[in-house]
Length: 264
Image (tube, rainbow, N blue to C red; front, top):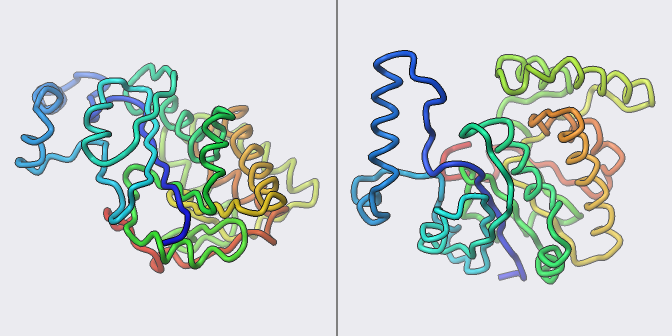
C-alpha cells in the first residue's frame, strides 16, 4: 500500500436537526433527533441508525477526521479515525457555515503543523463524510499527476450547467448573483466556460514532489478564498473556472469509475 493519509470532516451536530417547527412532521423529526442524539454508539449500530461519522475506508489505519463538535470525539475514535478539533462556529445546524468550514479541510487550508504531518505522505485522499470510498489503492494508482478528481454523475461540460443546477438550492442561490459576476470577470480575463465540471466529494492529492505540491496548494487556496469571499459553498463552480490554469497536474476520471458507499 502506498504512503497514504485519508482525511474527512464534519461541522455541526451528530444528526440533522429541524431548523424550525412549523408542522407535526417537523416536531416528530425533532423528537427523533433528540432520541438518537443520546443513544450509545453500539445501540445506534444495532438499530442501523447512521450518524454523520462514517467508518474509515477498509484496511486504512491512517485516517484523520476534523470537526468542531467535541461531542463527536468518542464516536470518531470508535469508528477508526484520529480525532482533530477545529474551532469553528456553526450557527444553525447543517448550514452555509458548516459547508464553508468543510472547505478548510477539503482544500488543505489547515494549520501548518497539521499540513506538515499530511505532507509526510505521498498521497492525501480527501473524502466528504457521506462520500467514503474503500477503493483507496485504485484511487492513488490512477493519480499519475498531482490531482485526481471525478467528473460529475451527469456530464456537465460548462460552468453554466453547474450554476443552473445550483440555483435550485437555497444555500447556493443566495450568493449566486455575486458568483455569476465572478464567472463573467474570469471569462473576460480569458478563462473558458466550457470546461468539464468535476465533483469535489473525493479528491486525491499527490504531494511527494514539492513543485507539484506548491501548484496544488496554489489552486486549493484560490478555490477556498473564492468560496469565502463570495460566501458560496458551491465550490465546484470555482474549481471549474480556476482549475483551468492547473490542467497539467489534474487527472479527471468518470464518476462511475470509483464508487462510494452511498452511491454518490
